[in-house]
Length: 133
Image (tube, rainbow, N blue to C red; front, side, top):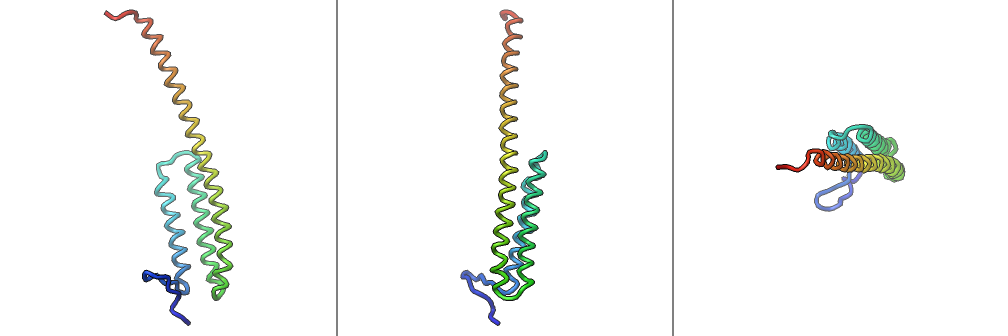
């Protein structure tokens, strides 16, 4: 059995090592998706975190599944599954981000409308005051 495939700069792929790296990356993504969106509120934030967790779970499951079979064939078989999961959940995340951005745009329109209404009210109140002495 070889000691793994050298990729350069001291990086080697060893049996089991790639699975550990993929699992670690999935866990780091899961943690980052929570930490970096903790100040998001409403369903957009919750949906994003849920989709990110499902994506991380799918990637980790595919990595673990690749250890069930032996040899490089199992890793090669897992790659299309990982890509499918990533594409599916990437699309879900993009959809949720679109909804979140749309909500933000609508909120901005409402704020602009409120500012315009306050300007009209300010003008009306100023005209009622009469000239300042």
